[in-house]
Length: 94
Image 1: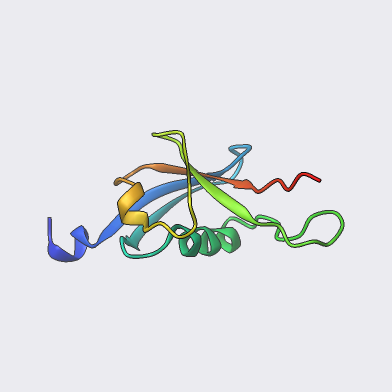
Image 2: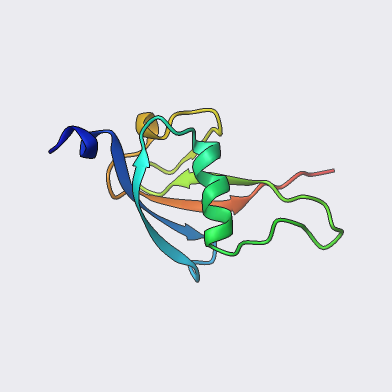
């Protein structure tokens, strides 16, 4: 593995329904989970507003581990090559 390849990850991403699936290459391991999620939202054409016009926030779950990832975590610390991230809207009760 080259040094450049070791500094990046290839992952898969999908929405909660499984209808929108993407393969993403060369993500910097130093990117935060939040940065990766924000970058995926546009590519996946996921809505950014709810029915009332309020901003939607999304979080990522690592399908392999079943763990919800924090926006502040480094992607290289919580994801392995070819892991699948499932993007789900954050639910705010109340």
